[in-house]
Figure 1: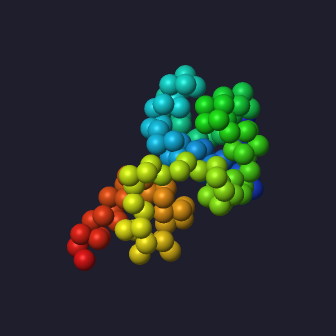
Figure 2: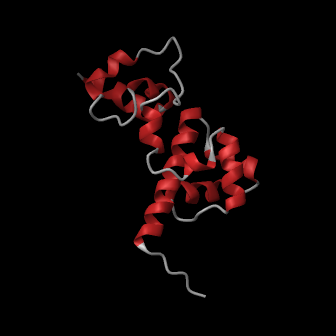
Length: 132
């Protein structure tokens, strides 16, 4: 049986994957943590986050429980935007100083305080600041 994927379905899968990735990064967890919880390989979690495959409704409920969000949040196209504008995102630790990254505010999609939970981008910005 051939599965036909239209553009709306592909967009939905990518949006769901982005919301899952956002939740994971907010908690600073590796993909393996969710994979272990679900009893799947981390490659499956990679495929979920990339939008290549979509979790079953049963797994989606477990994913939402793992991240302590509603399943409605995971399938909401405005979830990331809404979360970055509210108190739903994790607060930065008191020792983290986001003010040194103000030059990158236009580039970074989340509030700069979230750089604490994004070590790759923080390292990139630190390298740029060191070169100046």
